[in-house]
Image (cartoon, rainbow, N blue to C red; front, side, top):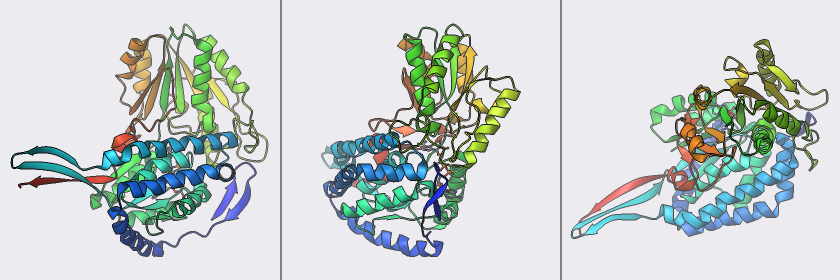
Length: 454
Ligand code: NDP
């Protein structure tokens, strides 16, 4: 498999893909390893995870360069991601023992009832390329801490990073028969679905997620899906600082080149402040440094996948056909690499693909609204349900909108954020189940109830 640098279109290296015929042997090996791993105290497993975190931070620079080379993520954002993902490990360190401890619910007379949390066994973690540290850690670190073995398939666009996870987990003391990274494309993922595994934890698109859920349904094992979104942001007329709201909205839309599951994908703005907001947002977007992702000043690098250039071009053409107005950007950049101009469209409406389909790139559509109820109806108009944001100086007014939206995460005066303290979950086409928080670790265990009569 060729690993291509999206900034230069050059082949960085070639990796040997795994032969699907080897999967049963590797899964058998993981099954053996899991038995001993599960017997270790939580603190011992956690010790390995903490050492892994230390090794990752010690090798931060090199790992950030690897991530940037295969995904085109600007180096500063690679550094941010790797450093930021450490918060999952800190959170596990503070809480995992408590979350995995047996719970006694009744202990009186001759009634003794308790719950013990047992690992699922060997789980598959099929992952995405856009934030491989964040979305990887959300699954494999929690799964390992809970006593499972993990078969990890990184996206083919983040395979070098996946191999680094394996190297440092092994170095940190996680046995080789407890974590395995397998290299291959979607066809290898397809083979994994046929194997005898105890859970499927997937991060990626709705289309692949649905396919996975359907394919493994007959096994009746846990399936967890962290999928895409078309996340709306609404700026109310009473917002305290229009310019600041525009800066935050632009960051939510354009950070990581818009390739975030919870990126701001459509913006609704009250007509009272619309023009000022648009002007501030366009000024902000035009100030972004676009270029070589290895330069620490760069904010917008190339897209990771060449195919997305066409998706964006089509969305823009469709929007312009239907009456949108281009304020900046609009096309592929005339240079080597998968670069697309940061693009802002106004006069958008719900008939346009840019307001309906996940863009996953540096483009944003803006629509003017005249009331909270109009904004609410437009925000609801999607099959996705990952996040939604409202900017306003009035918390009650903002919550009145947010409470009516069928989303896993609601933001007031912020957007595009994930915290290990609270569950990360999508509704409708954005997914099933939750990672992070206590719920995120409970996803990797099954309760066993004991009724004991002394
Ligand atoms: P894909 O669905 O294309 O791929 C995700 C993973 O599935 C990859 O490892 C891919 O392998 C693998 N895969 C592809 N086909 C199959 C198959 N038939 N069977 C099993 N596995 C398969 O998603 P992307 O990689 O393009 O990721 C982007 C998407 O992920 C966006 O929609 C984004 O919103 C979403 N996402 C959601 C997050 C969340 O937390 N809700 C977080 C991050 C991203 P390969 O890449 O090698 O083809």
